[in-house]
Image (cartoon, rainbow, N blue to C red; front, top):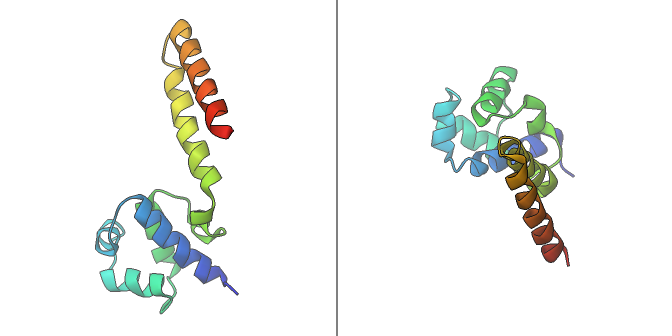
Length: 114
């Protein structure tokens, strides 16, 4: 059975890997030590509140995101984030062009859903 800190360490590793960072790179960004990151990810130690806040800030996530269910299994959030970015970009394109792009995206979506 996973504890809340197991979820934390799984999520910490997941978000670190999403950034393409090593434990050392995360340690530098969070003003922490490489050993601390390794110990947290391996379950040997638990982070302090200060470390949780620094790690979340370095990873550009809300601290609560590190405690949610295993984020690596939650692809919906990642997909939604990517589509959200795409939709934001579409708002800056002239309407006649964005309508064509939206139709292409819709057609592609239908093609890959089947």
